[in-house]
Length: 278
Image 1 (tube, rainbow, N blue to C red):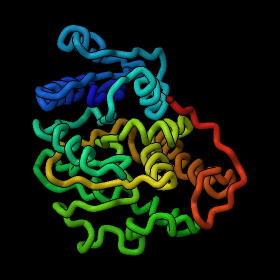
Image 2 (image 1 turned 60 degrees about the vertical axis):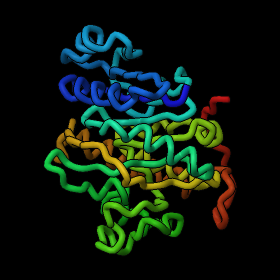
Image 3 (image 1 turned 90 degrees about the horizontal axis):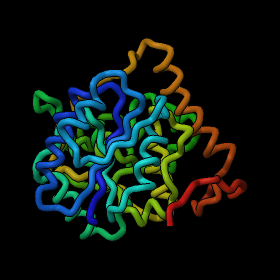
Image 4 (image 1 turned 135 degrees about the horizontal axis):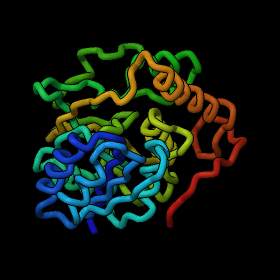
């Protein structure tokens, strides 16, 4: 099987329906499987999946397990050579999956590739290329971890010279809204760190891919439409807890735990307990 497409849903049934429909069309001539992990939705998501998409494998959680853990649940039972992690509030262009696969097939050193995103109005979403927000930029510079993100231009965030929409390039961080991962790379790095409940899991995985010698790429020759539905308000306690909590976890992990992964200049003092599928 060439690719496993995985989505995590929590009360986004209306968006999930159009996302799944577009992905099925995009995989018309591809050997694929699709898995949806539902994190205890209380809307009509589960009924909709059963009625409209009987061919999709659905994993039903009895509580919201978080995005990273839910993705891991699906990755463990998936079979594809590649794994496409994509948000349910997106629409995938019909050539996107095939073009991403062709790119990865021709770039053996690539651990993953994220795709160009546009808004429903057709505007380029720059985060699909630089992958991190200004808050993360500040954190990485303040902690000294910025030196391990040389391609993120942290001192010139959103600079026009490097947010060129159609420039294919190597990047530090894959954007979690839509990224194709090589399974053999995941076997080497381990799965997503489940401590990242809602945010930061993509940054952490991208960092580990780099540390293991793989390259991350931004692929602009196709696109997905991202509606960017915010499930928690930025002024809520949940947002503060999960967003800034993810930043704390990341810093603690790489400044204090010191993962035992080959990275020049970083002391090796701790062996992380990553689960690896062989």
